[in-house]
Image (tube, rainbow, N blue to C red):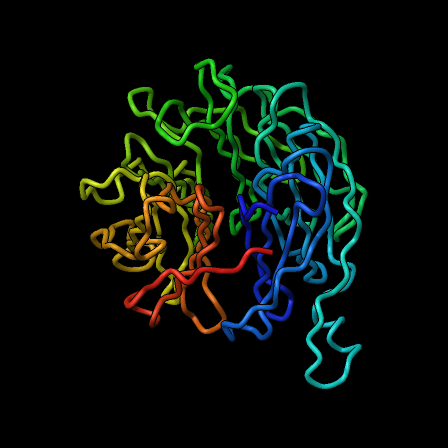
Length: 388
């Protein structure tokens, strides 16, 4: 096993976080997971295998907690067949723990990997997930230049899903990436990156434009509409839920831009685009999470080993604190370990502290950075995790 490539994070029904990671295809498992031994306690179990879905290397995993009973479900697209696969917990954590003696802390069993099918001919990107108001999960993916969606036929984890159906090309452009999020009022926001460039992979620089569709359940889709002006380029969209709507983040020429897509209860499409500070850094990827004060917090990677962070001045203000250095991961890298950090994943624990997980693309090593207090990251050090 050559190290970790991509990660995703969610919460179990009892408040413990669950981390899922993928590795390169070989002779064994390609999906792994670990979980906190207690909610917010900071200690994690060792890596456990989740098997080998499909054929070839798995892409970026997606994980979601079901509202019906709190069970987790994991989704991934594999490179060899360009098809979607999913697996789910057979019991919630609370139910699994109740079957053992006091202090018993097991992980529930997981299903075998089940196929979701191949959306289209051509390369497929990463799956993005959202909960619908009736408790079902919807999945979206960019494949064959179009956006595709599939949804559960009934709430709760299981094998019963619809076939993939097209949401078509955003504005006639070739779709490269997509994200999805649910609003507080039950509407579902889909934002796609479209480009006319002859490339089959989603770029990290601003080489496309963003497009938006909105689902008003059960099945009323708006048409694709441009979300970014023609003069502004964009990279893969990152959607984050707030108390009143959905915030969209993207990167153009190293600068992170944001826009509040929708405020619950208001018919307006949202606020205009604005930069999230400008400090001369060329950012590569960004991750977002609400902090314990309800502010949107961001952590961004550069094209080296540096991590930077900022947060809203107050919850919902749309204005931001200055970008500040967070950590260098690894802290003192020899030349062999320098490399772009990928797949940053920001989360808030039961104790109200922010935590970041990030993968070093060159070494395939996973690092964890934890905030010192609810108001301050420092001193922040990237703690390396062992490989599975």
